[in-house]
Image (cartoon, rainbow, N blue to C red):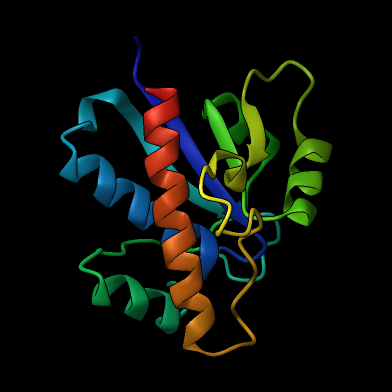
Length: 156
């Protein structure tokens, strides 16, 4: 099986999607699955934070759990749909935006990251924690960890 590429997408690419990229990348390395992946990245559907580092609360939550974060905000473009096998949205609004810009001839699988949940105690939508406190980031971290584990179980 050829190595696969995965992109995580939220609105601004400073909270949820860079956390998903970091957690997923960390899990892949810990499990020795690096050779199964060509590229793991994250994007925003909007260009509000292009070039910015992730939100300090998102980074702090990852660091607290021993997960390194190394990312600069970027906006997804139609061309990216040709470079990723999976493009995983954090919520319905971003999923809708992704499907709207996805080129018709792209083979990328575009879906909710939460479609990988197997534990119903986790909400399927990774809610935007930006306007809340640290609790939201912690909840996102647990969801993303679960979804990452289940993605690896199902897709590899």
